[in-house]
Length: 103
Image (cartoon, rainbow, N blue to C red; front, side):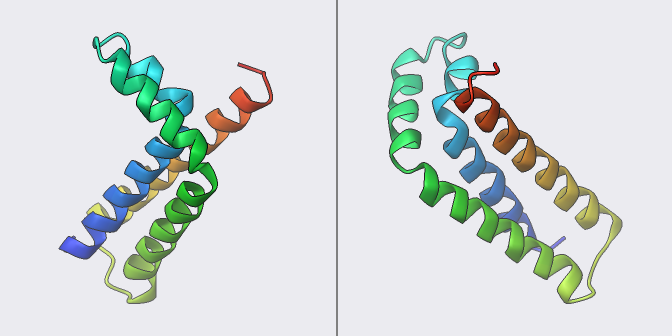
């Protein structure tokens, strides 16, 4: 796995976490004693939520291109890519459920 593949995978997960920070951030940060950071993250993520969704999908698209488009896939690269994809889709689903009031 080369550096570009690692960076795009990490970028996708990080931007997905920021996007769902309004709901997921406080659940993680408040028990750690970081309530100020949780509030700041919630305000930031609500304000830029659409931009962060687009960035997350772009990072995932680049990751898929780097793995499958160049035919340079190894087992570890494919596992990392699909783990990243599941984490991103999970955060999208969590955010959607929270916005609809189901959680």
